[in-house]
Image 1: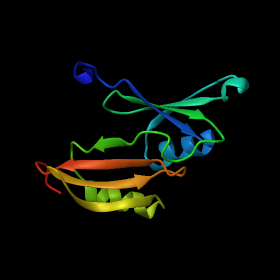
Image 2 (image 1 turned 90 degrees about the horizontal axis):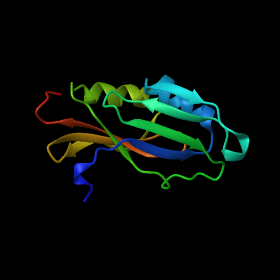
Image 3 (image 1 turned 135 degrees about the vertical axis):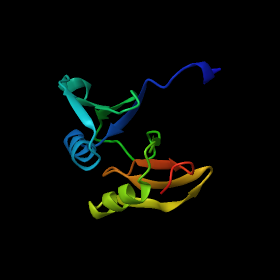
Image 4 (image 1 turned 180 degrees about the horizontal axis):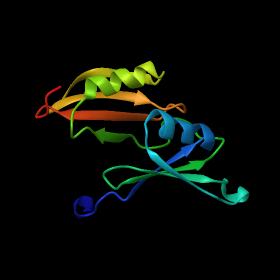
Length: 128
């Protein structure tokens, strides 16, 4: 049923919007827009833009816990997974599942400061 629809946004609820903004902007290098919001509706929220056109949206919620949001996968079309995972580890990013073989390529699972898991994936068609 959903196969004919593209993913438009991925929404996360995070405990600290400013900390999330710094992580996704400074550590992962995503372009971030901070949108002013009403205090009664959670305050400011973030839109992180990806090269694939799917925006990640982060809403503040002091009660937010890991596992309450989806996992996203960043596909590395130009390769470099070893360098990217190693560089993120040097920046203190938590490695949940080390770089390993995955169906049709390699992947690693990592976590942001709230414990939300995300993955990086590289096809076996692209040299490591």
